[in-house]
View: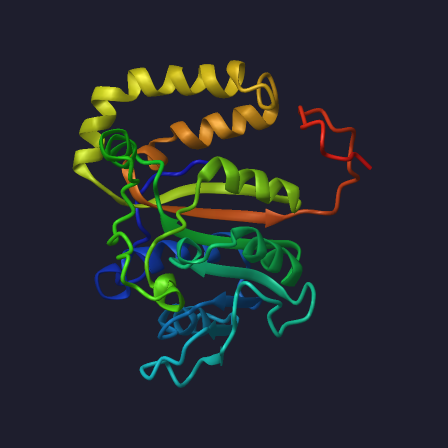
Length: 274
């Protein structure tokens, strides 16, 4: 489940980009050639083109029109990820969203749409700035702001332009909950852009972070304690990739629908249980 930060060597990462190279690695590692792939917010279509060249059937989307988009790739423009997208239920074997979710306020809507268009057994691959890294945690401790590798939104920016900033970083434990709620299981929690500074911080602070995280997730958090979900959150939060890489790279598999069991977590009195 938890891999190293090493990027794939089969593509030219310097020109292709390390993040796209990691997505390419996860897709080709978990989705057989020939399958149908959808990349939301594909930008210029470079990743789509690379996957198409090796035999995948690829469709890309964008919210805006990219004038430099690859002409050999099928790209549907005007697609809003917070609304129902123009694709049939369970029509793709793999869905990719790279460096996009952090710009969207409603992560739940995005994940629901991914689950809708993804076939049973299909793979969802996502990359996003990593606010769970040691560097980001220290930055938050000192400043109250997570380190998201982008400028904080200026208060003079119109709301319809605010999506251009990383205002809505992915909180990994919450994302893991959403995936579980949508019957999607993480199969790779990986990373991109490992930093020397982060490895130094890891050597200095891992001895403290790991036991504190274990105590919180496995013992103190009532709804996680002594459960397999608490263990999965602990493992994800303390993985070397999570602590030392600037980007998270996740691969999640959609599994069959599961019958809802009895609610075990503590819910507020005002919530009606059906």
